Length: 161
Image (cartoon, rainbow, N blue to C red; front, side, top):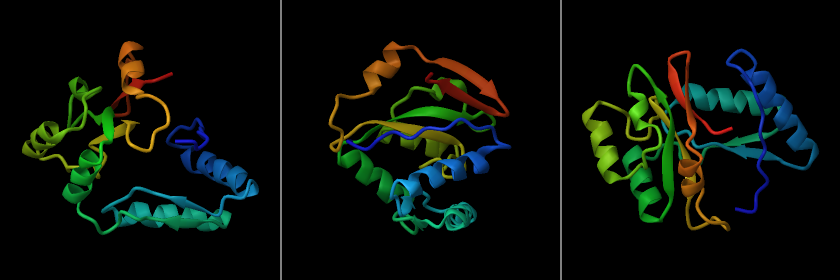
């Protein structure tokens, strides 16, 4: 996308401090705000606003208030491709890791009582291709690298390292 990738490594216990360190570094480079993809969770939106305010940045939530179904339809219709990379074990099994989020899978998840966008932490995705990407899809690279599955603290992850 032509945007530099910024990464950090943290545990649950160190997440906020690590996030703030990264935000502080970005602020020194001229960043004035952060854009978040939260839809429904007011407590997470408040956390993002608080953390950003602590650093002196704006927190922007352009998706807040939209419906998950509308957003997923738009995501798929505009050509974005996403792959499930994390599942909450008490909601979904590791067999869902690596699956493309498409209308059939969204329907299957709904039948299981899963929030359409995984908004309650049931699953997380990685966008691997879309109309704003300048390079070819990450999907083939990810699947050919055969990511290892790591399980900890109630979640199964694709280890992409």
